[in-house]
Image 1 (cartoon, rainbow, N blue to C red):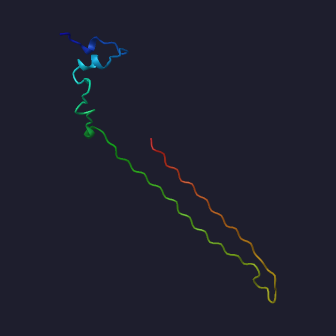
Image 2 (tube, one colour):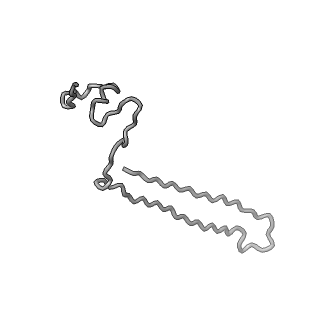
Length: 91
């Protein structure tokens, strides 16, 4: 029986499936591990606050033809336009 010590491997060494089967926690043909990885979430904080708000108000008053008596054919064209952009960045 051969023993494999991880500290003897270089950082660039690659092991095939059969070699990994000899490593504790490695996989053997046909068998899946009981757990892929363990994560202790108590050491990490994933909370964040993100607030976005766009408030707009537009009052358009057209006083065309005021103080004009017996006048005809008065027209007014009003094309109000509003645009708003809101961007939030995380990180």
